[in-house]
Length: 189
Image (cartoon, rainbow, N blue to C red; front, side, top):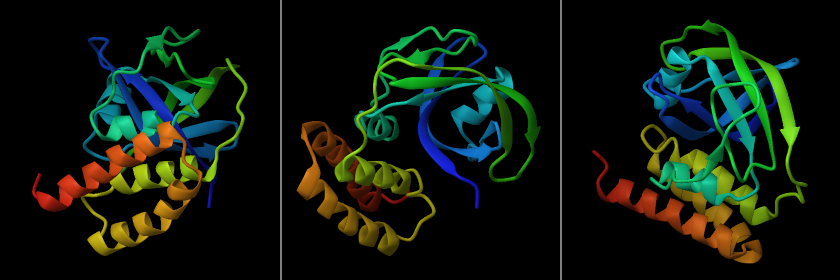
């Protein structure tokens, strides 16, 4: 199984609209694979403008925010690609799509790294931050994971949040739980 790095991927549309999404990039030697689900804005944007930026952040509110309608995170220009990076990124990688492996569910955009830069030191994640990222992955799959699995995993992850969260992690956790509750209250939406 290849290594997957959870990050925030920024892309742009043909008319320069910025989009950010939490995605697990798949390691492929010196390259990375972006595999967005169909349908998705990330997929449409990569097809139209074959560049992306992988933004490595330690504020897990960005992961939770992207999944709960809170996408107004400041961006700044990247160095070599037309896609902006997140201003709060501790580091970023600029990616160019070399080729696409089509797939009915998740096409794979095989990317080469044009450059990477560090902007601030990474102090590491606490357990609550890891739990929020795992919960964000669950929320991104609400439409196809069984309710029992989601509830069981959130119950397990809650312990880490209760024991180690700071204010940012508590806020992100709250956003994600509200999204799950709304989904189960209105499963068709």
